Length: 222
Length: 235
Image (tube, rainbow over all chains, first blue to last red):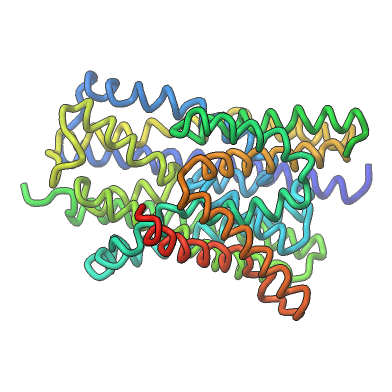
């Protein structure tokens, strides 16, 4: 085994150790919020409303949560995965941010350099979002009429097409053969069911892309 | 009881969560930066990743901020701040809060919710999104070693597999945008076109700034055009 590989493995092991530790601590902090609120206000939820609210949400978000880990972690790498799954906003922010940073740095995702750049990107992104939210809390009165103005409404309503149009061009122009099957499938599904939740369809799209890629790879079409 | 939702206690909780996330981000940033230096990565490349990521994050963060302001009507300011600082997303928090409110016999549409409903909402929003982090703690290391094994066995297929996942993710959002009405379709194509323009300017004029900030530029331009399209098409 080469020295470089040993060093990469040492980094991988240490990032997993650190990541698990921080993620466990984060879960405790996140769980402490409802506990503290219930204690402080002396208001614990009754089982009926709690499970009544949790059931429909968990039916959708338990599979989505697991699928997101399986889908996004190979793209993000270890460090960025631990951090992104603590700080949230993956599809609309952290994953595109990491992809953008990798693209600018001209680095392959999944490589050790890719691991470093995507961790830097996700950490920076988390810090900036945090800062924006703190400013939002401090400047609530001043910001509300601006951000919630009817003029800006279409801009914020279309933030995902604005993000994925540019990102789509970047990746699909490089990998157009990989995109034919998933893109066709997604267009057909969304035309038939325009309100279908994207979160559920991401793994369907990713699996169809992987199956098509495997087929073309075996047939030497890529 | 006064407005418990915007009490000092709630903001102290928010500050603790925000501080935790900030410290964690700095620790991971430092770790990656040091590893990059050890691997001989040019600091300039890493600095550029910081700057481009910070600039890119601004616009989506405003959208997250808007969600915080929207939720603040019923839930106060501190709880949406806490929830949007940690695991969850713009697309999760609102339906989770609404499902919890309905289960407790209330609605987010009103001016505010009583503390009994508020506690149900907090618990549901928190517990409903735990599966991803728990799965990571339990299985991520194994998953990662499986992916590394694929890369070792067939490096080219390993790279293609990750590219296919990227393209799959992007395709699902493209499909959703294409079926989202005329303003959404026009915004999508405008964004792609602006990206082409940025790349051309970078290549023809050698202005690196158009490569480094191509994504935020395209995104902001397309969002501005969405306002125009919406005005013209009346939607």
